Amino acid sequence: MKRTHEITKELNPTVSELNTLSDGIAEFTEKYIGSENRQELTFFARGIEDNVVGGVKGSYGNYSWLWIDTLWVSSSVRGKGLGAKLLATIESEARRNGCRYSYLNTFSFSAAEFYKKYGYRVYAELDDFPERHSVLCLKKKLISG
Image (cartoon, rainbow, N blue to C red):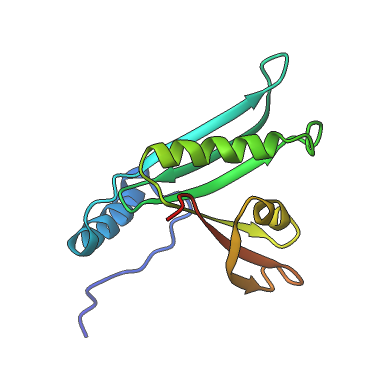
């Protein structure tokens, strides 16, 4: 029997190899729903000496959804409203760019209650990830109507 494909494990794939995967998915998806044109959004909160004490990173595209990848606040300033300001900042920028919704994932031991306080609701939960914990998927409508 003739072997036509070889599957290899790559510990350090090249950027080009990784781009082949993401470009292939993008090309396939465009046939059905058009190009997404993802744009990155990153905001930092800086302390007195210009050190980063918090930040939020996400992205959006043509599909009207903001993806919040990371929101972090240093323990030295946590609980003082900085996380809420960062969240409001990225949501506001996303609205200005046509986003109607936002979504994110967080661990059950992490910030789920924080996000719920600001209007996010759980739409899915992955149990035992890691064991005895969950990953929660949350979403929020950014515009009324």
